[in-house]
Amino acid sequence: MVTQPIRGTRDLLGEEYDKFSFLYQTALNVIPLYGYKGIETPIIEYTSLFERGLGEATDIVGKEMYTFPDRSNRSLTLRPEGTASVARAIINAGLTQTMPQKLFYIGPMFRYENPQKGRYRQFYQLGVESVGVSNPIADIESIALAAHFLNVCGITDYQLQLNTLGDVESRQAYRQALVDYFTQYKNDLSVESKTRLGKNPLRILDSKSPKDQELCANVPKFENFLNNASKAFFDAVQEGLVSLGIPFNLDQKLVRGLDYYCHTTFEFNTQYLGTQNAILGGGRYDGLFQQLGTNSLPAIGWATGLDRLMLLLPELNKPKKLKIALIVDEEWLQPFALKLMQQLRLNNIFCEMPLNDNISKRLKEAYKAECQVLIFVRKEEYCEKNVKIRYLDNMNLFSSAKEKEKTVAISEIVPYLSSLS
Ligand code: AMP
Figure 1: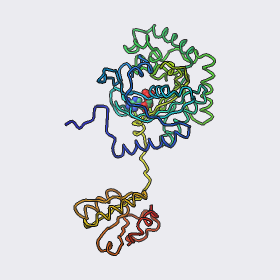
Figure 2: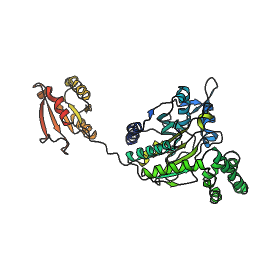
Figure 3: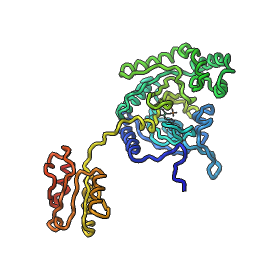
Figure 4: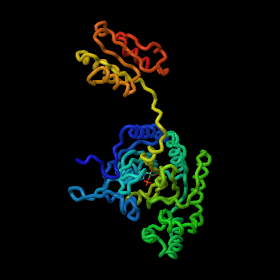
């Protein structure tokens, strides 16, 4: 039996699971403040959704998708990202007539990449999509939400990189300028960038190859090709961020991998994760809905990799919660203890009953579970309708708990322990 998970996938347990659920919970607390509602879409979709949505020239569609025929020979794909699915769901639910729509999702994505620290084949993304607003206010709000979410998670040591891809007219002019520029050095380009030159020359700016990067140093500047409308849009976004006190750097190499982006693109980077330094990325994608065959709709969104955020999270400061262990010394008392536990749990009190072979092992189990209170269920007290309580710590957790042990009437135990928690 193979017990290892598939390469690039992993089990989340213990501290990792706690960090994952902390991020999840924080997202549920923060994101609705901005008017977003949750959405769950299926993990498998028709392959054509991503081919049309993301574009055939992207790395994701070209070489990273988990694509397979189902038993009826339909081509299906494990979703590599969330935006195309959310757009499909909006169209399918007829919501394109009720704009704007603000949706967020959290879930696993799949990409056949080379696994390393911070890069997995199954990874978890939290994403937000705001559809139907072409005003740059939507871009500012989306970025402000990203910064807000990261800050509430305790992740504050990041840099926000910002760029614009302009509107279609500006992009076409720039695209031509790039083709003219790189064609002069065609023989020096990496194999991948030679292909990009024909299909998507903007992506050459994104190249990791040192030779390509050298050539990119003197590339024409996009700002010289932006028309007035695109310039005004980008100025408004920058002014909005300045007025909200959100610092950013301009980075014209930030073109992002997907074909449907326009105007604002942004990425939050960290210096603590080596080459996997991108923790959150997004931008405006006014072209997507039309690409999926419906009317044109403006949209802006971002996605963040929860796996990477987990690596950056400071030690979780778990709130101290009252934990109780019932130490039962004779088997005939267990049904009573079980009932008592049910009452405590119904009152939101953590409790468990160690069931090891002997009392000293049961006590050890209670210490290990970091219980602060033991309830001894023993014949002598039980016959008097009482139980004995012992406090294991006195870390100012319970102001009323001055003495180390106390006898409490069974009828009083739930209100008494509720008053401690
Ligand atoms: P993207 O959908 O490529 O724009 O990525 C958005 C965010 O998802 C990135 O900033 C990363 O934090 C995260 N991410 C993307 N690919 C991976 C991966 N293979 N493993 C872990 N996180 C990833």
